[in-house]
Figure 1: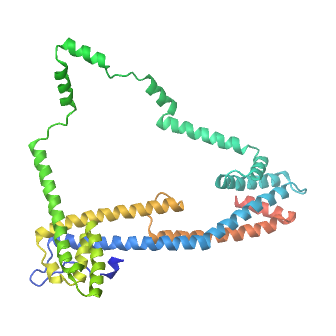
Figure 2: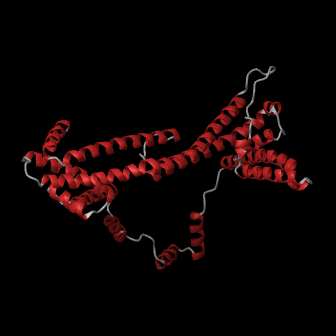
Figure 3: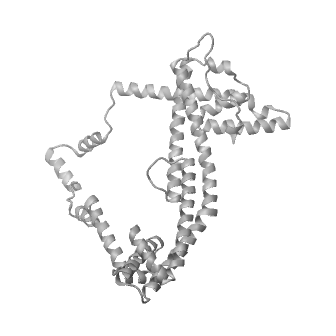
Length: 370
């Protein structure tokens, strides 16, 4: 909500005395543009969550339920037609194949259904439970081959010799070595201690800490200027105090998130800085700002990836391929259209199944399509 109130955009603009932007200025503009695009993507995802839920509930879910009912009715209708006279052996075989194809999908999707399982077993010539058990065994064998079985791991743990010497062994070794116990303990402590860092490593760590402190200081300076201008305790007018209180909440939230861009936008919105100030940010300050903005880009990328993964998991979408708010809505629209066609087709097929003469012609066409 806070970001929507900022009407102006932050960017460095080339000036007459400096018609070309520096490398740091170009990077600053590019990072801000990237952040704004990712903000827009996050807002689009929030809207897509609501729209997807509504469309799924109102359009797709009723079609899925209707299609499941029609498929079950088709299985029973074909099973009934199979038992009637007037069908050749090949036609009965074709019916059994259709029944098996539909029933196996429904059993896998919807779980154990005794009547459906009996029909599948009858027409497939197999046993559904046995087939599932075989598949489970095959998957377990593959998993054991790739990752090793639990039994193998247990055996390894059980048979592995304990290479750690006992307390009595340690004492004996120390006595044989002629070293006092205290000296041996100190030696072991030295072995376990962290290795000493070189002067180069220590200097690098010191520079990194100093760099992080400069970044924090850059954000802190912007924050302090806003706090001084907006602190509600310094305001006597009740309405103005309320306005500044709300603004301070936005400032504190941006500071806690290390959101430099939002702090700069608040400065611009409140007219505490103008385009001239932005154009004249020093090169050193821009370098610090760019580091902070790059971190912000990384955080936004992580947030977008988390939303995308959560959306895939929640709606059981394919784990591969790029997903955007536009693509998920298009996919849902396509799924609704396809399911509508499937419902119409199965409704037409059900009307055919009841007439043996028409059913025989339909089976003939079905074999051609296969």
